[in-house]
Amino acid sequence: MIKANPPAKLKPLNNPPLRWFVAVLCITSLLILILGWFSWQSYKEWQTTATKVVRLQELIGIIKTSDEILTMSARMAATTGDLTWEKRYLNFEPSLDSAIKEAVQTLPYEKLSHAFLKTDDANKALVAMEK
Image (cartoon, rainbow, N blue to C red; front, top):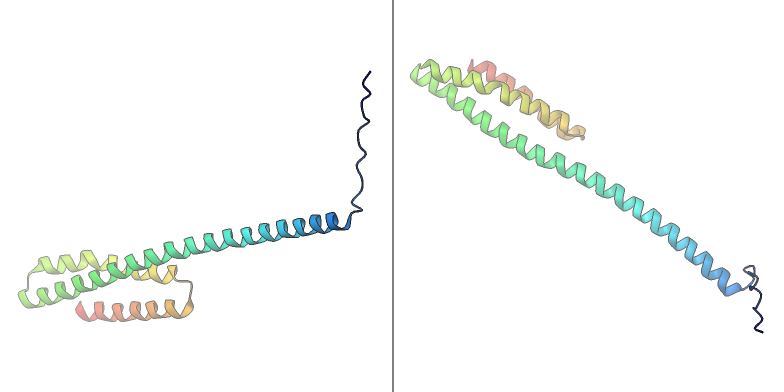
């Protein structure tokens, strides 16, 4: 008859190299988790920043285009006396104003927002002069 060997008893971690291995494994796992969390947070922040930068570039294009349209409309209205240029001016004025205001709200940095606020003030003075 074949006798079955009794199951081996689990020995506590009395073996020093095994203790070191388990300790190093735990520390390494913890560091990987921490670095993974920091990487994920950095990625999310980068994604948010990239979205804001793209939108700001769009707004800068809108501001430049609208400013050019307003300036040329005012010049053409003054030169020709045609009221269609004045209507065109009045149609594009709100888009410039809203683009500047959105740019100010989008920027998190006070110094850059201040630059757009100066642009807004200059735009208001220019619109008043052109009208």
